[in-house]
Image (cartoon, rainbow, N blue to C red):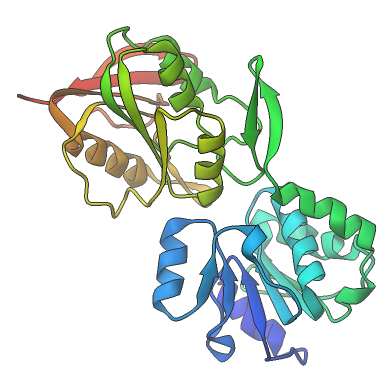
Length: 325
């Protein structure tokens, strides 16, 4: 869908084919190999295998590109930041694309807000907008909007957290995660894992409330979340950038605690949460325990043996099981 829309738009305009940068998304064949920014481990690895030069930190992105392409994510402030970054790093041409139901309808206006002339077309339920006049962008607005891509301190629940738009629950303490942490047993100890750590709330509460924990391995697919988690925690927490779906796990943890993801794009992906639960189960030492929180409507109880209800609270449920041994 995205690729078809981009290809159609490129038939309508003479885009440069020199040195190109792609912010999210996969470069079209005519523009490969290219420089790519993607903070998610699975996409970064796949794009590297195809010969692209991939970075996961905006600080590592180069300058003076002949063309910059943006495949827009869903979070509004992140998109604004990426458009500003594209205008800042391009010698002239910037093209952005988004599905109509995920910000595409506002894309042209967002680009025009930087003071550049914009053209746009619709194709395959997407909107593509572009400009050939990046140097004409309002520099003050460009610099201000790029701050949306930088880590920022935010006071949540009475303490300061480092976070950034675009990661899960970036500007709130997830109520399900809070429920989970308020109902864990006191005897959690040894080596613990936090699967899908986000900016590190679960890991921070575990380290604070359970002095018997020796080490917490906190995993996330998003490099930005891992960076935030490390910054929000002390030496006891080992923040790891990895895709748990493809990770070969070992049975090394006394406890796994998690709020598993269940979305792919805008839709519910029950299989994603189920896979996280299965990976967590396989990671437990004999007699190790798994604690997770989930929305009540998600059918997780039969994913692994012995998964039982501990607590219902609001829209959430806490489930637990113990490995054999």
